[in-house]
Structure formats: C-alpha cells, structure tokens
Length: 392
Image 1 (cartoon, rainbow, N blue to C red):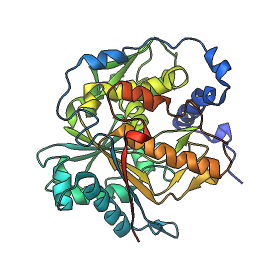
Image 2: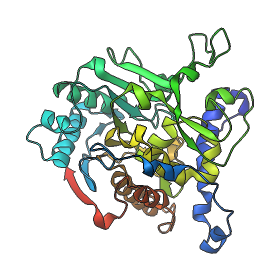
Image 3: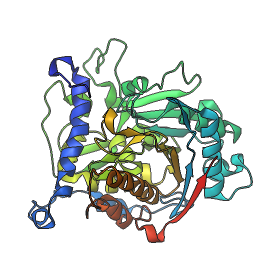
C-alpha cells in the first residue's frame, strides 16, 4: 500500500515540491474534459513568448544539428534486480550517439555535438528523489563519454533549479568528484536561503536581463517565497544557462504528467526560471513551449538524452511507486520536440495497455505543437526519423 502523507511529516521544502508537482496534475486536468467544456475555459493569460522569435537564430539553435531525428535504444537487461547495469547503459548511449550522428566513433559523435573548450552543463531532473529522478548511473556514462571525447571534468557542471534536490537524488560531490554541482536556488550549511544581510543566495544566481513574462501571478507566503525566488509576473532565467555554461545536455526522465508527458521541454522550461508555481495551472503547455525558445536555452541545448531506464506511466510527475516501471529505454536527439513526441507515444501506449486511459487525449501533444510553432523542432510522428535499436 502506498504511503499516505501526513502534513505533520512534511517539511516546507517537501510541501512546496509536492505542491508544484501536484500543481501540474491540476493544470492538466482540463485535458481529460470533453471538448465542449474545454472550449468554455477562460482565455489564456498573455505572455511575452512570441518575443523569443525576434532573436536571430544561430547554427546551434534548436532543433540542433539533427532536426526531426531520434534514436531509441532498448535493452531489457539495463536493470538487473533493482540495480542499473552501467556497462549496458554505456553501450546504449554509445549506440544511440552513433545512430543519431552517423559518426565513425563515439568520441567523434560527441565532438559533433559539443567541443572540448566548452563548459558543458548537464541538466538533470532530481525533484522526485531517488525513486524517480535522473539516474546518477546514466549521468556517469555521459561524463565518461564526454571525457573520452576530450572534455575535462573541470568543464562539466551538473545542475538543476534547486541545488539541494541534487543530493537527495544521489548527485553529491562524493559520487561525482571533480564535477561542479550547482543550482539556482541555494542554501548555506545552516539551511538558510539568505546571507547575513538578508539577501537570497538565489539573487546572485538569476539574470534579470532574461525573463519570461506572463499576465498571471500568485502571492507566496514568507515560507514559500524562497522556493520561488520572486513573485509577480516575471520569471527570471538562471545565470547557469545565461552565462555559466556554453552548452547544455538535457537528461530528463520518461514519465507522464496526466495524459501527457514531462520530458525534455518541461525539464528545461520549469527548471531554468524562477516563480513557476503561478504558471502550472493556466500556462503549463505555453511555458513548456515558450521558455525554451529564448536564446539562453534555444541556442545552448545541444543534446537531449531521455533516461527511460526506469520511469512511470501514471501518477507523474511525482513518484508514485505503484506506477513506476522499467521501460529499459533511452531516447537521444538534438531535437527536443521530436524526442518528446517519441517519448509521449511510449508512455501513451503503456497507459492504454494498463487501462489508465482508453484513447489518446486530443490535447496530449498540445505543448509539442506549440513548440513546433516556436521553431524548436518537429512535433508530428510522420515527420520524425526514428531509429529503434535493440541491444541484446
């Protein structure tokens, strides 16, 4: 029987984390409504998302070097018992990189994506703890292959929005010696968000020159505010992606969010800006599509590797043990929209097989369609070149 949470057991941090994850489920509830009822929903709040299209694109802009191409690598022995087989993961990532790029060797494949003189940020998703977060094992594999391609450890950064979530998911200095671990929201060794002058440590981690504006706001109490960094109608980008790294490797989890998924675009959008709780209910799809269209993400995300070794098909994006499953799959592509579309089909098939839903929701791919409009990638399966590789 799943554990029933008692409010007395929850720290403020846990409460905010669960509220944010639950907020997404609430935000997605209209997806299950009849079409006629959905049409009666109030108008969407205005955003500055279209302004992202005004910035000139570069050769590195999404959807990257291989638009509309996805490598799916499957290995039923990726997990032995309850442990990840790192050797199997290494082979899976290597085969996926070779398939995607057509390179002669794995180092050559990586050098088509990133360069040794770049600072590489590995964006993980640790918000659901060890049970349903990016696995340290697959990140170890990525780092070893980056090193083999000439990228030194000192040029590699593992990051997420909240630095303190990293340790909970197994991303520690002891586990990753020589690798910088950081987050936008930080605490000191005493657990405080602020320095002696009362200034949030996150204030030095955000870049107010880059922001996502939306005509939606939510007032936070004093305990909640540190987790959002700021309130109001502005969400500021993290300096991690605006100035600190040159290229981003995005490593999300294969999991559902209601009848849709929370993969590449969601990991980038909600993990790179502040003040996100206000965006879940009215603007979840728009935020997923519009935030990555701004240059700090659009021009720096070089690769997406979906960790689908272990994921979920229901109850997501929070970790509900009864719905966690071994997909034994990774997805690799420079095009985050195409990768999300392939991942969506995998989760949808599982949900239908498990009788969680009877058929596809007409709005299950909405955020991907919006992302295609923002020129971030390919949303239609008929336009995606998918290579499936099975590793014995």
